[in-house]
Image (cartoon, rainbow, N blue to C red; front, side, top):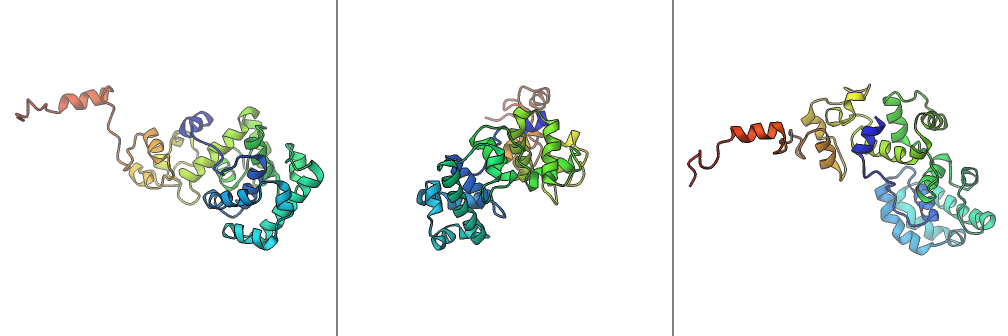
Length: 258
């Protein structure tokens, strides 16, 4: 399944926009109970207004809350960002630390957020157990654990450490695009042959194809032999099926077309 995930989601990446470790920390804090797309609409202006940890530490609370209001829970998030800025300035000279223990000691940063930062800003392998990740690894039978830390450790024992970050991205991509919580697109899933939960969602390819989401939808459907409209894709011209189809189709001359 890991190999198929890699082939299915070659574009997997962190979907939060950022340029620095601090920006990623801020974006990840804002993503709680929000969407990456929604956060990405807010952060350009936010990052321009608060370019450093000191800027967050000295932020006017009302102004900051207004800027992040649309991400939800804005009061708690503003407290976390102001506290984060102050702690980074006071304890780390204004630079975000790059160890798990130091990160989780900062306001607003738990283990999941720390692993996002480590893996994507510092190239330190980490497993990000968000809602999608936990749901899929349990659905696939990789672990029965519910506690995120136990899930992290269980999957860490199955996956080579060097692949932790990218495996997290690929599983999350699959959860967002194909393997949905209530209605997984089983009949349009490249992992179907190896999935113990196959059949929890529609197995009819045309019906399942309607559930596949995201900008990579045409590629994901092509992986299972479907066109973008959900119908079976025509066989390549140089394949045996394609050659047979071509041989069975009358040429223009045979049809007496001028």
